[in-house]
Image (cartoon, rainbow, N blue to C red):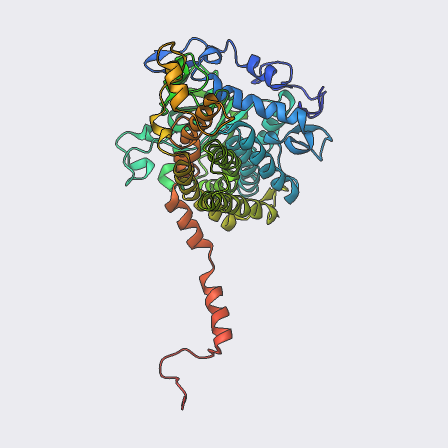
Length: 511
C-alpha cells in the first residue's frame, strides 16, 4: 500500500456498515470511487445521471482529487503517522497528536489553495473529526456513553479505505428568532424523528454544504447551542453519501454555465472549482454504531465552539488562493507593460501584506495548540477567530486591488469564441494586445483568472464563503468578546497607572 493511502491494523475487521473496497491511493482512484453511486443530485432543474462526468461538477471533483495526489507527492506535508498504530494516513483523516500536527494542517491547506485556486472541500471533515474526538470523550466521561469508541472505530475505517469525510453543520434555520423546538416546522433543524431498535431516524436539511456530493461520508452535527427542549436536535451521526434517503440540490455559482460552452479560456480556472449543495435528509436511518451524540444538549455548544475554533483557523487556505490572485494581478500588470510603476508595486505589496496577515493569525492559532483531555490537540480559539475575522475582510480588499490592476477589460473582454471567429478574431487580436512579446491569449487568460476569483465561480469560495463560512463576522466578534479577557487587561492598566483604590470618595490630596 502506498504511504499516502491510509490504514490502521490490516487485521482489524471492517464494520458491517462499511462497504468493502480497496483503499484509495491516487486522485485517479478517487475519481473512480465516485462513479456509479446512484446519487440523487439535481442541478439546473434536472437530475444528474453521473456527477463525475458533468462539466459543471467535474472541476470540484478535480480539486478533491488534488488532495490525494499531493499526499503522494509530499507525504511529509499531506499525510501523518498515527502514533497508536504506526500507520501513515491522509492528513485530512488524522486526529492531531501534537501542535506540530495542527500546524502542518495549515501548511497543507495553503499549498492546496495555491495548487487549485479554489476550495478543495476536505477541511470541514478534518475539523469535525478532531472536534468530535474531544467532545465525545467528554460526553462519555459525564454520561458513560459509548460515543468516543464509536467515533474512533469510524475514523479508523475511514483511514483504512482513505475516504473523503464531509461535514454538515449549517441548518436551514427557518425563523432565526426562534429556537429549534419553537419552529412552526420542526424540520428547520435536523432532528431525530423516531428512535428504533438499533438506531435513529433523522429528518431535515443542511445548507451550503461544501463538497458534499464529492464526499463518501457526511458527519451531521448541530449548528448552535441547544436548550433542554431541543433534545431531538442534539444529534451527531455519520451518513454515507449514497444513502437513498439523501437528496442533493446543487447551488448556482456565478458564470457556472461557461463550463457548458466548450471553451477553456472564459472559465478562468479550467481545471478546478468549488461546489456547494443543499442536503435534504428524508427519514434517514442511522445505526447506533454511527451515532456520536443523541440528546446531550449540554454538549452541543462545546462541539460547535471546538469545531469553529478548528475551522476558523483552517481559513488559511484563503492565503493560498490569495497567492494565486496576487500572481495573476502581477501577471496582468506585466502583460500591460507596467510592472515597475510605483503604484502598481505598492498595490501588490498591500495585497501581500493582507494575505500574510490572514496566514499569520491562522498558523499562530495552530502553533498555540494545547492537548485536550482526550489526547488530541486543540488550536487557540482567540487567534482562530481573529484569523477568520480577517478573512471576512481582507480577500475583498485584495479582490478590489486586483480588479484595479486588471483594468476595465476584466469585465468587458469578448468571448474566446469571438477571438476564434475568422472575421472579427483578427481584429480583436490586433486591438486587445498588451506589451510586445505577450500573446493576446495569455493576456485574456490572466484576466479571466482574476475574473474567476473575484466575480466568477471561484469567487464563491474566495469571497462569499470567506464572509459566511464557519460563521459570519458577528459570530467571530461574539467569540472574541468572550475571550478577550478585558478584566485582566484592566488589571494590567491599573498596575501600571498605580491605581490601588478606585472607590469613589477615596481620593487623596493630589496637590
